Amino acid sequence: MLFEGVLRKMRTEFEDPIQYFLEFESDFLHMNPLLGKTLHLNFVKTQCLNCGNDRPIYRQGFCRSCFFDSPATGDWIMRPELSTAHLDQADRDLDYEKRAQLQPHIVYLANSSNVKVGVTRKSQIPTRWIDQGAHEAIEIVEVPNRYLAGITEVALKAHVADKTNWRKMVTNTIEDADLKAWREKLREFIPEETQSYFLADRDETQLHFPAKTYAPKIKSLNLEKTGNYQGVLQGIKGQYLLFEDGHVFNVRANEGLYVGLDIG
Image 1 (spheres, rainbow, N blue to C red):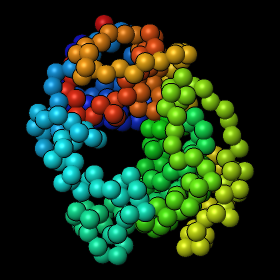
Image 2: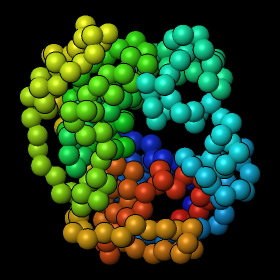
Image 3: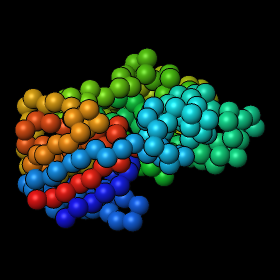
C-alpha cells in the first residue's frame, strides 16, 4: 500500500506502549502494526510547512523566508526566557504570541539518555516527553506563562543538563534515575519568582515505547541525500523510526520532505 505526502512529526497517544500515527493531508497511518514489516521510503520533493512551496527546507520544516518571518519560529520557541507577550510586547505577531505564551507552562525533568530539564506548555504533557524519547519524567513547577518557565529553566540548567544524547536514546542506553530526589535537589535553585509554583506532590510518569529490538550501532538516514531507502521497521522511539540494519530516521527533523511510503 502506497502513502504519499509531506512529513510532519508523528502524532502520538499515551498508551502502553506509546501509539504512533504518521499523518498526511488526506490520510494517516498507524505505525505500531508495521513493526517487523519492510518499509520503502522515497524522497519526492521538499514542501515548506508554512507557504507550501517547493523550496529547500531551512529549519523546522520551513523554507528560509518563512523561518525568519513566521511567528511560529521566533527565538522564544527555543529560548522561552525571551518571551515578551506578558509585557504586551510583540516579537513577530503579538496575537499569536499571546495565545502561545500566556497559558500554563510546565518545567520538568525527563530522562531520555540522562536527566535533563525542559519547558513545555501544560497541554503538551506528556506529548513533549514522548517526542523526546523519555522513559521517565516528572513535573517541577507549573507557571502561568512561558517567560516564567523560561527563567526557571535557565536557573536550573546551571545544575542539570538541558540536552538529550539522541544516540544513547535511540540505542536504549538508559539508566533509571530517582526524579523525585532530583527535583528536591534542584528546588533551592528555582528563582524567587517561581518558588511558589513548585510541584511537590507529582509522581514520576513512566513511558514505554514500541520496539522489538534496539540496534547497538546506528546510522542516521538522510533521505534527501540517498533518494530512497528500504528497511525492516524494528521500533519507534521519540520521533525516530528504528530499522533492523541500524538506520534511524528522525521524522521531526525531516518535516517538510514530501515522500512516498510503501509497505511490503
